[in-house]
Image 1 (cartoon, rainbow, N blue to C red):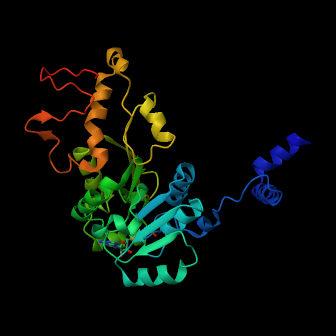
Image 2 (image 1 turned 135 degrees about the vertical axis):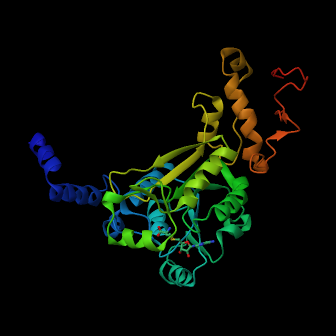
Image 3 (image 1 turned 60 degrees about the vertical axis):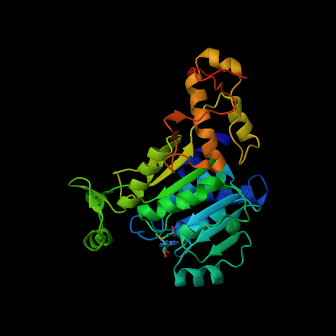
Amino acid sequence: MKSFIRKLFYRSAVFQWLVGVGSTAIGRTRAAGMAHLLSYREDDAIGPLQRDEAIALFGIVRTLRPKVVVEFGFFHGHSAFNFLQAMTPDAQLYSYDIDAESQRRALSEFAFDRRFHFLAKSQTDFAAEDIGNRKIDFVFFDAAHELDLNQATFRKIFPHLTADAMVAVHDTGLWHRPHFGSIHREFVEEMPGEWESADLYAHQPGEREFIDWIQATEPGFGALHFHTSETLRHGFTLLQRQRRLSDHGGQARETGGRGELAVEPECGNDAHGVASEIEHIVETKPVAEGGLRGLDGQREKDGQRQHSTRTDEAGDGQRRCK
Ligand SMILES: C[S@@+](CC[C@H](N)C(=O)[O-])C[C@H]1O[C@@H](n2cnc3c(N)ncnc32)[C@H](O)[C@@H]1O
């Protein structure tokens, strides 16, 4: 009988739905809060993020449980509502937009949710006071699409990122010509994107340059690109500071190190061939404190790499544990 029910479950969407409703009704599981995604557009979404991207971001936020989410680019609230649906009751979303209609819609349609805060100001005017001087766990760039404005914004938020903060940037992918609809052909005619090849079009080249700039100036950040040419995809990129999971610092961060620096590896690690990792941590530590050395062009000060208190400043080029 159980086997029959399982077979029915895997083959019938209606039965899956009935089992899901029953499961939540008896309290075995909780509702996923994804009903809104059924109405989100996919192929012809141009302003808002595409539905499959919303599903991915929903899952990421639901997985990470960020407490402070910052969004640049509210528009009509698709991404904002998606974040709110994924966020925990004690999390806060701060959404920035300069458009009057976005402000009107945000204030009238989102007022019911006390976790939501609309900032009628440019992304470049971000101030720590806007978010109650708290650290940012997750930030979503989807506003100006211009490299210089994103750079200025990143410089502002950088000191306020937690050590493991996730930075998501929308519109970093390429459109593949065989999947164009009429809305994409119109966009290409009117907007100054760039053809990367005969078939691949960068609809927001500034966002792609922004990713390259972050990684060039802050090489401690790794990036994952959610891009494909198998369908029409705007694409998004996730960035996060890289670290080794086997370091004690990693555990410290995951268990409450929000807003703090990586705990450095034990001295013994030096002798076990992980000097390069120590180098990495030494190099990125002040950056996480808000020094923004790379972005200020001061990573190499007078030709000398700055050392942490944990290194020997004997001047012989060797690092020693204190
Ligand atoms: C692509 S839409 C955002 C879409 C939204 N994230 C979604 O998925 O539903 C871009 C929005 O950014 C806003 N915007 C443009 N420049 C901005 C700036 N400098 N600061 C803040 N918002 C800006 C626009 O008014 C527009 O509403």
